[in-house]
Each structure stands twice: as structure tokens, then as C-alpha cells.
Image (cartoon, rainbow, N blue to C red):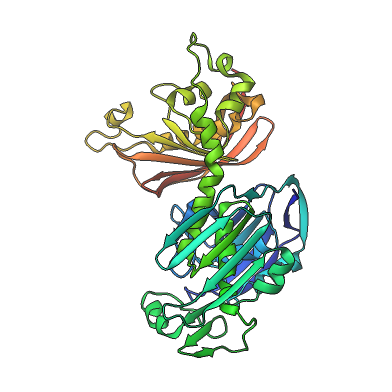
Length: 455
């Protein structure tokens, strides 16, 4: 097991977006341990970020897009492949458009950025996920599988529907083999696909400067092919980038036939599900707590309760939430917690017509007050701080809110999803970024600061 790595300094690159055709400025920035890879849209207000995680994949037609609320980043796979191949665990990618610059259609320029910035180890350990059992899937013409393996290997066969330019290649992927054997492979398409892509608003920035075009038996390119099997090697580059959305390095042998971004991301989801199974099994087979007399949250839980209740992979029902938070009707704004993952918690509030505030806000036109959505964010942020054993049983006092936005009304019958990430924790002071969503659409957001005090 080795150490996590990030960049030594920032590095920038400018170019054209493949699908948008827009001019894009991109900067790679160092990031703290356990940050992962995040894309930051500096062209949008508040510079929102989207984590490169499989749960944020929003579209896989000809490229992989990720989104969070209203924020979307397109064509992320080549940048992700560069980070994964070079074993960069933590970095921020700043862009001023909705997709990174395509460069020459490969990952070569991104690797040069990483090499120019330099790589530094971090204090936290890198923890690859070792595939424990075979996973197989079939999606359209694509067949994908992954098997247990000591390292990370890709074996791939690529071909179009007519069987043209069928290529096969297999490689143990290491930083050295990645740079030499895969990173230079350019994206490609078949000539007859171009009209469809243009009609669907894609490849506005495409040219022979950043793609190889296959027309019947001819290869159209502005330079000779970089590898004898450049097409299948680019497919492997895409696989590496898409599978990095699992959020951890993978140890396994991937076997792919006619892969696509859709099948790559579906395999990533299945790997992620296998990775979570031990956590779910522990949760499923843990015996229910023995009945006991009602105690205060601090007496019932204690430091041991923090470890057992607020843990990665756990979900919390209403009774468990009330063991952690001191709030009660009508001011408890969290019904259950559906995800706990590192410094992030996702919770749910069912907004019913019986909420007492609807009587006066407003009669005949009930709307959930924005300040109560802000309170929900603060309560979920408090759960994050209380996760630390030494903080369990304390009260989180709401101190301030910044960058508050209320985007859409929340009405009776809505299910409010509260997605909060702890951004800073020092002593008893915590800061968090929260977003409230209804049906996947952001309705409010804020950065909150709070302080823990004894009960």
C-alpha cells in the first residue's frame, strides 16, 4: 500500500472543447488528501464543484459527462485517465466552460501538465479496491467483465458493426506503461457517424487536429498513427478514465469487447456496488439494539455511539437521527440519512402538508420557508461534525451562512434531499457546503459555519 499523491504546483492549458467548440482555459491544482478529483466551474457564480464519482455520471453518449444539480461537465474521461494513469489521487480541475479542452484527442497534453507540475506524496495511504469476485455485463454490442487480479490489467477488442479495423490489445497498466503505451492514443470516429454527431450538436470543435477519422478502408489523420493498434488503445484509455469514477484505484483484470462509455460507467457502478457490499452486510446483520430506558442522546451514545452509528456506508432512520441531533418537532429538519461517505452526508426531509409553518407561509399558497431549508443544511452539517467520536453528544450551534441561494419553491409533497459536504474542521468550528434538491434539481444552497458546544 502506497501513499496518496497530488500535484506539487498548479499547471494550465488552453484549447478547444471537442463537443462545444468553445475556447477553454483549464488549470490543474493540488488538493488535500482524500479530496479525490473534482471539477470546478470557474465561469459560474460561486465556482461550484462536481466530484468525479460514478454517482454523478449524467450522460454517456460519445463521451462521459458528470453533473451535480444544475452544474455539468462534459467529456471528462481523458483528463480522468491522465490522473489515474499517473496515479494522482487528489486534484482540482478548474475550467471556464462546460468541458475540458480536447487538445490532440489523447491524454498526452494532460500528462505533460502533470509532469510539469510535479507529483508529491501525501500523508494518507492509498487504498486500492481489490475486486473480490468476477463481474460481467452485456450492454448492446458491448461485453465487459472484470476478474480478481494482483494489479490492474485491461484486455480489449475494438471493432465497428461491420467488423472494420478490428484490433486487440492487452496491458498491465502502470504509470510507466500508461505513459508509453496508452496516453498518446487519439480519439477516433467513422466517417458515416459525423453527420449524426453534428445534427445532435456534438463535435463542434472536432477536426483532424484532435481526432482520427475512418472512411471505408482509409484512415484520415494529420499524422501517421501513433500505435499500430491506436484505436483499441484509445478505447482502453477511455476505460481507465471511466473506471476511475469508482473513486479508488482498482486491482482487477478488465476484459472488454466493443466497449462504450455507457458500458464502462455501468461496470464502474457494479464495481462500486461490490465495494460497498461488506459495509451493507455489516449493517444488515448487526442485531437491533436491546430495549432500554430512554436516555439523553449523550448518555445513550457516547463516543462508542459515534463510531457505530455515523459510519461510512450507513443509513440512519428517524430514531437514529434523534440519537444524534437534539432537535425535535417541529424543528427537526432531517427524517433520515441515506448516505454517509467520508466528509459527505446526504439526508432526506419529507415535506408534508401537515407542516405547521404552512398555515401562515402562505395561506392558500404553501411554500417551505427558505430559512428552514438553510436550517436543514446546518443540521446535516452538524451530523458530519458529530461523526468524530470526541464530538458525539454535543450540540452544533449555527453561526453564519454565506453564498445563500434560493432557486425554486419547495411545496407540500416534495422530498427534500439535503447534500452536505464538510469543507473545513478545526477544533470545535466547522464549515460545510450544502445543497437542497427536489427531484435532482437544486432548490437552495449555502455555505454554513457552526460551532460545537457541550450540552
